[in-house]
Amino acid sequence: MSQPAPARSGGARVEGARFEGVFPIVNTTFREDGSIDLDSQRRLVRFLLDAGAHGLGLFGNASEGYTLAADERVQLLRAIVREVDGRVPVIVSSGHTGTDLAVALSREAEAGGADGLMIMPPHLMKPDAEGVFHYFRAISDAVRIPIMVQDAPLMSGVAIGAPLIARMARELERVRYVKVEAPPTAPKISAILDGYDLKGDEAPPVLFGGLNGQFLLEELDRGAVGTMPGSDLTAAFVAMWDLWRAGDRAGARREFARYLPLIRYELQPGLGVAVMKHNLVAAGVIASARVRHPTRELDAAGLREIGELRADLPQEALGWA
Image (cartoon, rainbow, N blue to C red; front, side, top):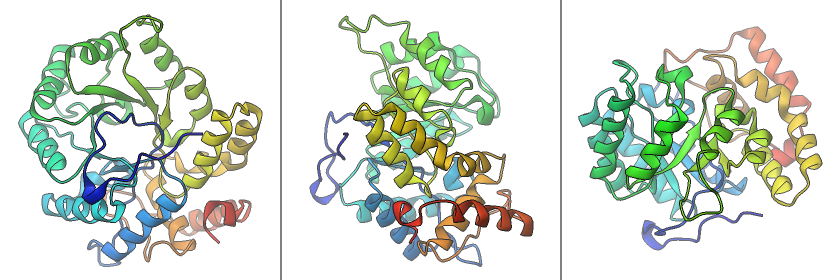
């Protein structure tokens, strides 16, 4: 069973610790008027830590990072790092449409206490392979913490082939992780690792899955060491992880099947964040399910549907009771 990173006094980093396990993307909590709700944010962080999260991801798609102002990112990072207090690593999304701005955001995240960076390639101009390499090289040269390449062509529109991932891992000092969200994800993980002699001295990048953990078990079987789902099902994903690590693959599959209807529902484009927030409100963790446009709200039928899905799940095991 994987253990969380050792506690760090005053937010000091654990140098050389490898990230692995369940790193939920932390939903950003808003009041009904759309302003940041720091009280709910702190409760959510405590909920995730109590659920056994091995690390946290900030400002990703499930965090509605695309709706946050620069000063809000700083405020949230400061509050969350303080609440975590070194108990688990914190990975911050710091990509941008421009390379210079991505460098600035990455430096800001490092200064604010991030243990690692998760970075998508620029999605507006959609650079070619050399452009993607230049972008990540500029960020790698500017920071001292690990970089996780977010390979998410469904969001970025930029394909990052396995050879380019291998090149970046070999040539860029800080590129050490890849979050594989290029479907089909399990074969992509195999394609990346097949380029390495795993018995030799060359270390491949460390691979995580995403897309709300929909292919978690297949990804782990092929060499991934973790996943980055949404916030509401963290305890369920930790249970699957623990069973798989203990060698109980059948038990992990049964656990996954129990939660699959809700995992599937949350994968509807644009709706997943609202579903997660309504589940967290129902669990008494956050005060409001408010999202910021263009994130979509649930209609009355959707609220009924997720209520029925929640009723089929073990509330206590999820920390929802």
